[in-house]
Image (cartoon, rainbow, N blue to C red; front, side):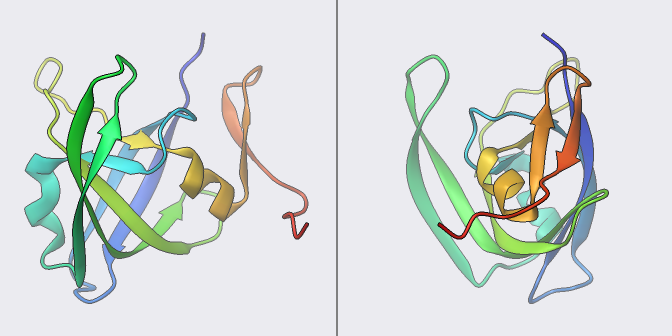
Length: 128
């Protein structure tokens, strides 16, 4: 199985100078853009924050913090406005691996090309 990593710009709507450019792993099993809790302070103060429960790939239940609104720009796709999820993560060799989930992919019109290991633009959005 190949890995797809894309560059994303994330900006706090209410503190526009608080923005971060990251590389994130495309993970269609994840719902949100998921970032390590250790990075939360980089974004300043959010207008909304809500603790939610999540089920991990190992079936364990963990708590995460949904924050927003933020402006999200995946390289090569249109900007969208949504929320991001902060989760306690353990760095691997000193590096965190942010995740890009399916909600954001669908909203910005990106489809996963598993053969070419890349994102492709969706020709038409659904209205049905």
